[in-house]
Image (cartoon, rainbow, N blue to C red):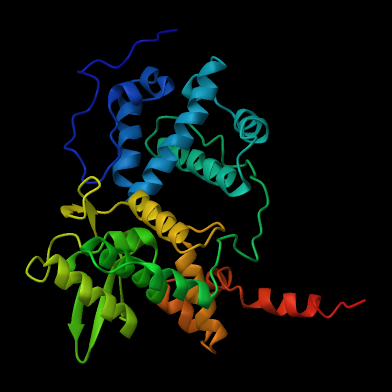
Length: 333
């Protein structure tokens, strides 16, 4: 059994893909390496051609690599893998992962083998018949703020610096537009624009889709203050929400990442005295819940949030939590 790394002659040369996962040859699973040039090319093409979203690409690469490493440790080659191997891995070697993560691992394994089958690298998909865990979600687990807590958080942010103005505008944009954090930090200055008498927000959603929503008057107020202080009006094709230079109060030309946004949220929540769990996604769930509490329609909330189905939006709806608590308090002794 050969255990050689691919030589430069075997590794297909491709131009870097913007935002793509770095697939240096020393990162490749050894089963792919040993399977030969055609398998290596097909493996690379799978991530380059079939998955547009960078985060999905990275998650699938980790899942597939983990399974192939497991198979390699059991002295299997790529075309040796059978349904029983995939089932054994899913059943016994994803212990500790949440059910959605296990389902994602299985989905990634199925997809890569489908791709290998159509490329005539392997004769059949060994994962096709393997079933993952049942996972039915009727209510999301994202921490949600009350309307008072959300107001407390925003009002606690000092606005005597451009960084404070940025943080307030960032949180307000997520809160009032029900937007995913990745869509918000991916905005350029030109994605906040006037149309008619109102300002609008253009969000870059999953799958390369654009989603445009009117800007709430409070978010508009906070964004205008930030854009003016940061002097961004004349820089339309640059990041809207920018990182900070060290511990200074000066912003850079570089856009915020999701991790940067999370750190901002945690820091501001701690300062506001909100000690419970809170994350970037909390503002999406909070905005939807408050909207529905105030009589908003679920279908409209789904449209604002760019959900394909209102069933997805319903996962963010926590209006029933307060009703349940009120009913529980009726138990008096």
